[in-house]
Each structure stands twice: as structure tokens, then as C-alpha cells.
Amino acid sequence: MGLTVILEQGEDGQGIASCPSLPGRHSQGKTEAEVLANIREAIAACLLTLNDTARREPAKSSKRRFFEVLV
Image (cartoon, rainbow, N blue to C red; front, top):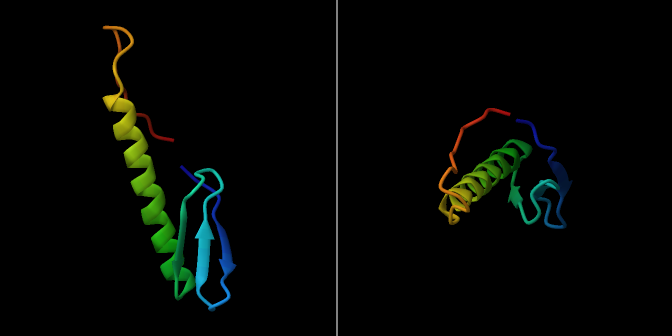
């Protein structure tokens, strides 16, 4: 899966990254490599949380099944 990430330079000179597809996903770092690694970690944590939340929601029918798909 590929997501667009926007990189900017903050007033303090640090890199700032955001992911428009996942509102609220922001990260920062001293170097471009560091900020990209940090935003990847933030995105992965967000997706895992969303997946876990979806699995915990009450089933609307007894025929509900879960599948893993790669995107």
C-alpha cells in the first residue's frame, strides 16, 4: 500500500511530515530519513488501531467473518 506523505520544514528547522489520507497523522524529525521513518511508524500504528477497533465492534449478524487482504 502506498500513501502520500507531505514533508515540510518547520520554523525550528526540523522536518515535519503529515499524511492527508489519515487526518491527525503527523510526525517530525531532524533529518528527512528520520521524519520519514517516524511518519511510517505513526501510519502503521494508526492502521493497526483501526483494524483492531473494527474487529472489536459488535457483530451485526452471526455470519460476520474477517479476511486479511494486501493492498
